Length: 210
Image 1 (cartoon, rainbow, N blue to C red):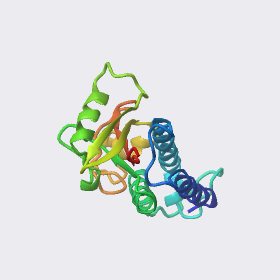
Image 2: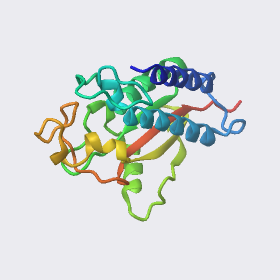
Image 3: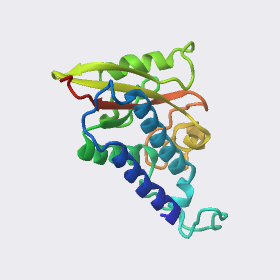
C-alpha cells in the first residue's frame, strides 16, 4: 500500500478519535448535527480516496502519481471502501461509543452485499426517502431518538455511485473476470453514476439533561 494511502488512513483514525473524545454530548451545548455531517464527509473522503486508488493498491510496484506498471502482477488485497469503512467504524465505536456505519438497501434483488451493512428500521425509512427522485441530492437527514432508554442523535448522509465505484458496482459486462463478478467476487449490480448506493449512518449518544 502506498505511503500516501497509509498516511490518510492514520490521519483518518486520529481525526475521528479526536472528534469523538466525549462519548456523550449535550445537544444544547454542541452542534451535534454539524459534528455528524463532518464525520460523514470525512468517511466519504476516505472511501473516495480508496476507490480512486484501488488499482494502485492492487498492482505490484504501483505508486501514487505514476503510471501503472505495464504487465505487472495484479493481486486483490481486499482494501476497498466497504471493508475499510466498516473496520474504521468498528474501531471508532470501541474508542468513542459513536457508531459510524455504512448501509444500503441494495439494488433490486441484490440487497446488501454483506449482512453487517444491512439497515435497521430507521435506516430503511431514511434510505427510502433518499431513493425518492424528489429528495434533494446531497442532503442528509437527522433527528433525536431514544434507543434502549438512552437519548441519541441519528444522522444519515446519502452515498452516490461515483466513477471510481463503477469498477465494482457497474455493468457486469465489464467484469474483470468475465463472469459478471467484481474483483471481490461479488455480483456487479449495473449501477449508473449518480445513483443512490446507500448512506453513512451515524449514532451519537447524548448526555442526559441535569
